[in-house]
Image (cartoon, rainbow, N blue to C red):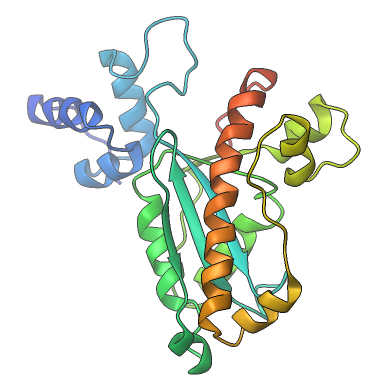
Length: 236
C-alpha cells in the first residue's frame, strides 16, 4: 500500500469510520494504507483512547473458534467457525451436507471467515496459536485463498495467561471456565463428530452450536483474565 500524506477527506473518512467502529484493516483498504498507518493517525487525532487507558481501547475485538474434522489441515477440513464481537452477537458459518458429500468441503466457509475477519482489529482465541490459526490458514492456502497476512490482525491467545499466570489442574478452556464459574461449556461427542464429517445435518447443527457456545464463554473468560496479561501487538 502506498505511503502518502493525509488529506482532509482522508481524515474525515477515518473519523467517520472510527465513529462507526469500523476496524483499522478495513479502513486501511479503503484508504490505500496499512492498518498500522491508520491506527497511528487515529492515535494522533485522539480517535482511539483517552490517556491512561489500554492501547487497544477502540479496536474491534473478536473471539474466534473453528471446528474441524481432525487435527491436520492437509488431511481434513473445517466444519464451522464462530466469531463474536466483544459485547455483540456472534457471526458464524458451517459447511452443508451437500458440500461434505460432494467433496466441496470448506472452501465457502473458509472464504466467509476471511471476509468476516476484515472487520476486526484483534482476534482472541484459546490455543489459536497452535491450532485454530494454523489450521485455518493452511486450509485457505490449499484452497487458493488469501488468509489474513502478517500485520492485518493482532492476535491474543488466552491459553498462555491461563497456563503461566494461573495454577489450574489442567490448562484447558473447560477447566478455566469451571474454575471461574463460567457456565455453558459443552463437551465433544466423537460419535456426533464422525457423523458431521460425512454431512449428517443434525450432527453439523450440534457442531455449530458447540462452536458458537465456545466463543461466548471465551469472551467471559477473557473478561476475567484480561488484567493478568500485558496484551501486545502480536500478529495473527
